[in-house]
Length: 117
Image 1 (cartoon, rainbow, N blue to C red):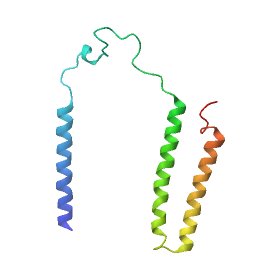
Image 2: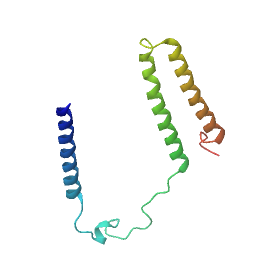
Image 3: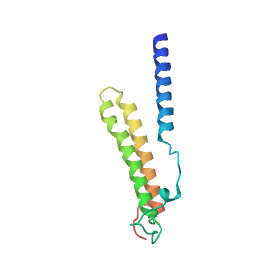
């Protein structure tokens, strides 16, 4: 027990020291206005460097990530089927799928899944 605690403390101290050294070495010591400004062949930029970002694309990407994580949670359920009680497994699976379907219906109802208006 004590060796596990000692090992954990040593690892924590080593990672903290490495993170502090990396943070100290990565900071720029001299901040120059010319170095931080955008550069276009020696001329001042003609327009802003920021491109307008589609909020619809961002929402679709977030929804995709959410459902991707949900699929990653569904796949291990097949592997737990042989070692679990069938009634409890079915109950948990149905509840989980029902929650997913409610979320999908809500997103569809709010119009978040429509790309064009």
